[in-house]
Length: 336
Ligand code: GLY
Image (cartoon, rainbow, N blue to C red; front, side, top):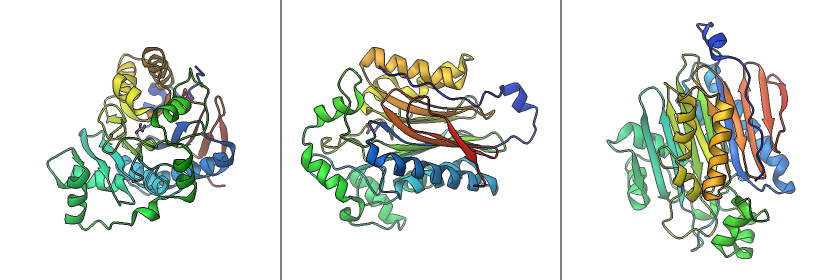
């Protein structure tokens, strides 16, 4: 298994807590998978735009929750990523979308699964959180709710790219696609996209996370992966931090990856070590590959993956950090 090094800003929590007005941080990912070279530049550009978008919300007084929603909407609107526009097709050639959002202040959570014809499922998930007594609505129920609150629907064709149609026609087998993409004991090839996500901490120390996906190409109709499941595809708690996960959903579900990472943080480990240990455990225990982004209430953050690549970006103070390949840590001034 390739273990990419996590990246942490290296600032001790106690040093950051000396600042009453803490610096806000946003971290985003565009999915952990074997990103082919022809999608590399667009993937990196896309996560940089989304991180800037999320940070501009924080910078203008928005909450961490507002920031992760804005960042994930930007990723859902970008056809290079498997979420919203650009989603993969299931075995029936349909688009079924999953999304999740969580507010670390109160543990309020909203999710949708197997929803159709929605351009920004993350905002629908937020509406489930804020306008219903439930945490998750699925399939027809999620679409009925969307209609009841006036969320616009879009034709399936507008969500599907030409690239995806061609890939779907070429790769008709779910199991081999998953093995090639996420299971590191197999030769990795570029078969499916994966998931987008964001985590943020605002200047008040509140954390939030959001995750959105079209799932895995050729999944069974009605299959739901980790992304909308609390504790697996994401979790946010002001007492420990916020996580958004990506990778092989069935593996992430088995180890409840987001909560596993936070449980290590709760035991005093750094965000980078907690992510690495948990992804390593997922690889060792269930042979699953993936990635995670994490932020702590004190502003420590990490972007870690065991897949071949993961496009990620983070804004911390005046610097935009980003990367794609293992150990890649590039940076540029935010003002650029
Ligand atoms: N990680 C996305 C999925 O497996 O559905």
